[in-house]
Image (cartoon, rainbow, N blue to C red):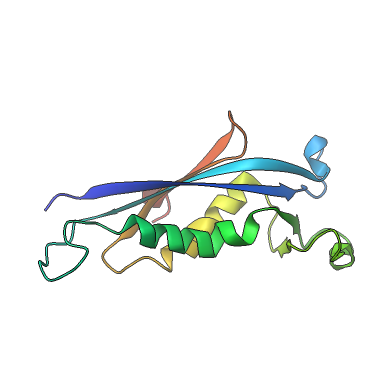
Length: 149
């Protein structure tokens, strides 16, 4: 059977700041992120399976990515744990969705984190092929499984 790639597109709004950065992005600012998630596998051939002919149900992929990434980060503020006194910034009246990461929340580090989150949730017969994360209309990072074996 042929290997097939499926891609689903996701959108979320997120703010971040880059600790100790030497440019404007050291200030809290937001982006309209677009995340493309591509998985690869062979369509199911078991005629008794309700997912017959599918590599993976798009709805199942949406559920995984929504739970792991979009629902958590949409309209959130994300900062690195390296920011001094970062815990004191969590003012509930302003930052109900506030995340402190182990890493600098760059597009590059976020996409690597997203790959780890998604890979652990995919069905056994489906692999994560690639991710593409647009931070702006003209700037994006890409992650490929083949580069990370």
